[in-house]
Image 1 (tube, one colour):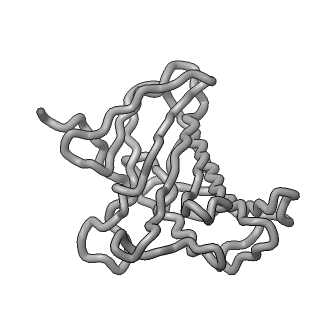
Image 2 (cartoon, rainbow, N blue to C red):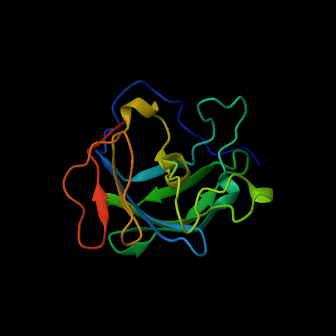
Length: 182
């Protein structure tokens, strides 16, 4: 079947607003990043979400879509059905319900547990959170037009090193929110 229409990206700000992304990176034993993402929406109707496919420094579509699991999307507290694009496996289609101000996403990034599965990015001693592996973003906009407010929750006693600027001190559950970035 023909693929549902996915808007070509434009060089404009995403009209919905800033996406909030919260990553719980405390499950180091099973190497699972648990993600909660809030994507504000400007209107009801069809919308496509992408998992990052083309990554800087890569010369082919290498985004680890095979490690994404458990995707649940809700709006106004109600579950919203999603459909995988029949042609582009990195794309997901949803119908934003009337009256919805945002889509709430929950999913996991199941990071490799062995080098045969890919680059190991989480161990009991350290982790390498690659933000592109833990988000979906609205199709139709250049990445520089989409603002994201990331938060990471680390295991107790862990510290972070990043170029991102914290928006404030870590919370009691060792979560740090960073200032919005494109």
